[in-house]
Amino acid sequence: MKGQLKGIICILIAAVGFSFMTFFVRIAGDLPTMQKAFFRNAVALVIAIITLIAKKEKFEIPKDCRLDIFLRCFFGTTGLIANFYAIDKLDLADSNMLNKLSPFFAILISIPILKEKPSRFDILATIIAFIGALFIIRPTGTNMQLIPSLIGLYGGFGAGTAYVFVRSAGGKGARTPVIVICFSLFSCLLTLPFLIFSYVSMTPKQLLILIMAGASAAVGQFAITTAYKFAPAKKLSVFDYTQVIFATLWGVLFLGEVPELLSVVGYVIIMGVAFIRWEKARLSEED
Image (cartoon, rainbow, N blue to C red; front, side, top):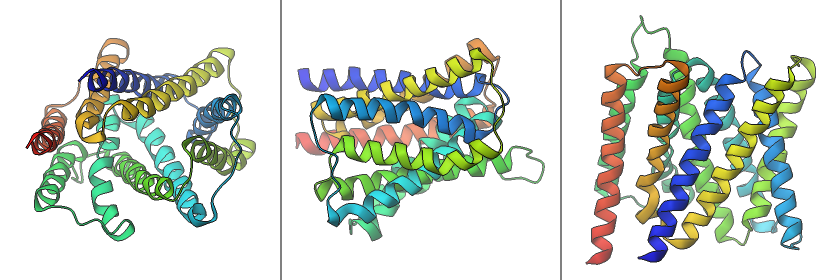
């Protein structure tokens, strides 16, 4: 139980860290999405390299998982860019909630990649979660935020797919610091050309804010990694959704954002399904 409590505390810290990352990305101002993504990942890359050196580990990618790591980098990076675009165009709560559909996308992607057969309950939960997403996206011709919402939805897909390839690579012997370095380096290299050719000069304040975004993301990444060392995902995953609550709080307090009623309905549906999945996993373990 003590381990589970430590895990919950760590995942709450991660939720605060990731919610602050989205907040800092928003208040960085009218900068290109690729520029924001580059600086966020550059900070994470430096921290990951320092961590690898501190642990005195070699940078080595097992041959069997090179494709898995590449696909993790590709989907993770494109998902991150999509998420950053959505953060700039949508309310913080909406963009965070669409990104939190990643576990449900992971269920679907695990079928062909990991050959995992989801239960009927998982399939039903995924369908209901996507119905909840429709309340946030509101796919009508009059919704001016439809395109940003669909891009935000891809952000959740990219993140969920990346998680599947992380699991696949980890099962073949790839170490966490190596995967993090590969992802951060790939992201920096992919966004660097856009940074060079469409660079927008930043004030010292904007640069500091983007560094804070990267630092907040690093706190979130290390905290969530630590959390899953204390307890399994099925005991902790539901607490990750507190990120949406924190993001909503920052939006209301600092940006004057009040989520629309339909969006709130979507939040309740998605988080409700996530809670039921968590509770069902917890009870089945006790049995």
